[in-house]
Image (tube, rainbow, N blue to C red; front, top):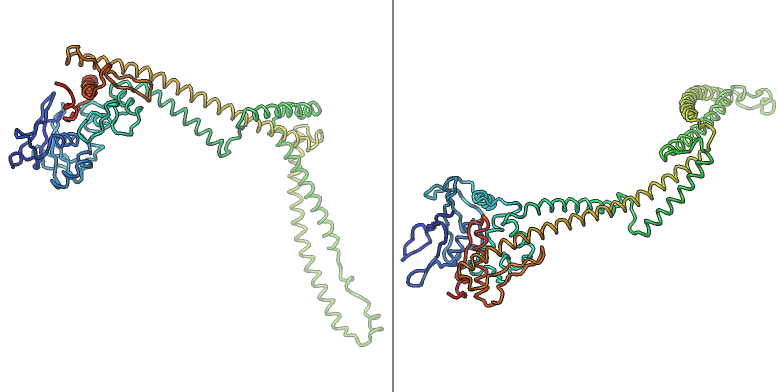
Length: 487
């Protein structure tokens, strides 16, 4: 429990007062005997909330921060594991320092608010599934300027959904673990559905979007299946029962075989032409010089002989190039022959060397491919529907568990409120009632008594019931909760 709060800005009769101590059970904050108080009751209640990790003391009391200036709030908790001393500054209020018993800072590295509230949650044994410390404490710190809705006492802030308050209550009364398990199953189902629909959206998976397209695909699949049957009957030995991938391999093999045969024929023709050209000889370049002199007595024979020698040199060079090219062509023809022989032997092993034209295998493969794509699209439609059905069924199962736990919680809280209300009023006043309609809506009222005082009394009875039913360590009620209630 919280055992003390110390601050040198707490003034009594013009002087700093000592530690303000607390005891187990009800603690009441009173003003001075003269009715004045330099700090104020509500302000001090804000400080108590501040000690428990709240921030309203800084965020809402701007006048205090401005007039008082920077100050340090020191405080101590006593748990089974020992007494712990801390301090928190009004400036760096998101940090908490560990101190010694005289509130000297022991460790220069402060704790974050999250680490600090996690420590309190552990020491108060409030480590309940999915519950944050401030999410529990903040709902029951009902101080001036805080949000208080007499019809919705579970709400922590004005715009919070009613479902969030119901969920927080379920966690506090320790009825949330089964819900959390179901919730994880729902999230998993929803994630699978979302991932699958995303894959469909970005065309990673083939699918159809309507039942009409699904039926159209099914009809096309049946028609294509008939075409396959006809091909298999016509070429029963080769195609019967053949998978699409087998037909495609055979079709590709025949296509490659045709290609290699064409290349072999072309290179063979080139080799024949080259060998014919290789038979060039110098006589083709030599003429009858005597006849030339007869007609052209002044011709320069020396110049012509030089030209003839050049032609012979070029011919010798070409013969060398022809020989080199011939070797390359022969090597290429050998490689092509290996490729051709390999594919011919492969088809012979399958008994397909001449039985079925390549175009039949292509047709067979294409039909198989179309069937597979259409079936894949229909299967995806079925898969999406299946995932959606699972998502819906898990959500329905979760809703049933929530309603069951809500019913148990409602009975426990209403019974405890009735018990406390009877103890306070000797059974002469109606007890408040919490009525949870579903997981998202609830009502809180006192039958036959809609007065303002009755509403605030109802909230107090509700908070006291939660204090007894749960491990909630503290509730805070400002005077605004009390002044409307009849003595």
